[in-house]
Length: 255
Ligand code: PGA
Image (cartoon, rainbow, N blue to C red):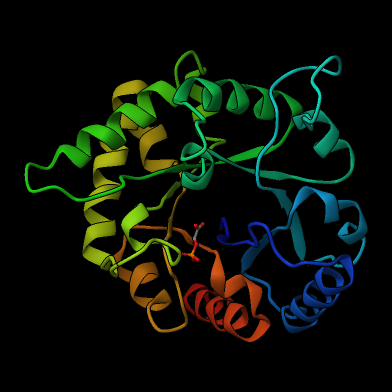
C-alpha cells in the first residue's frame, strides 16, 4: 500500500532558526505515532541541515533547487547538494516562484536535475484565475506539457503533481475556497494530459496532491472526493496543531 502524503510548505518562515527548531520538534512529537501517512516538511533551505536528524517520521523537502552542476552559479543550491544532506523531496514550480519569473522551461530543467539526483519533485501546477471560457484548462495543460518535455515516460511516475489553484491559496488577495469537485475535475484532466504524454497506466498511477488553504475543516473532503492522494499545506503547516489535524484526518482515512 503506498502512503498518502501530507506536505508542509513553510515558505519563508519562521524568522529564526530557534523558532524553526521548535516548530519542527513540536510537529515531530505530534506525528510520532503516524504510520500510514508520508509526512514531508519543506522549510527554508537555510534550516534544512539543522533539522535533518530530528525525526524518523518526517522527511525533509526543499522549496526549490537549481538544475546546474557544482560550479559558477552564485546564490544557487543544487539538487545534488540537497540530496547529500538528506533531503528527499523538492517543491518545484510553486506559483510564488513563477510570479517571480520562473518559467516552465526553468522548471523542466529542475525536474530533470532533481530526478537524476534522487529527489522526488513535487511539481506545482495551477491557474491564477478561473475564467468562464475555461481557458484555465489550457493553462494547466501547457504547464504540464512544458514542464515534462523530454522526461522519460517511466520517470513521470516518480513526479508528484500538486494542483494548486492560485485563487485559493491563503495569501492571494480576495481568495476563495476551491471545492473537492474543482479538484476532482482537474485531477481527471491532469491524468488525461499525462496519459497523452506517457501511458494510461502511468497516468493512473501518478500521485496528485491538492493545495490551497487546506485545513482540518476541508482536508477530509479533498482526500475523499477531490481525486487526490494527499495535500500540500502552507499556512496550516506553521501551526503544529493545525498541521496535526490534517495529518490525523489523512491517517484515519488510510486505516
Ligand atoms: P496555503 O499555501 O495552504 O497557505 O494556501 C499553499 C501553498 O501555497 O503551497
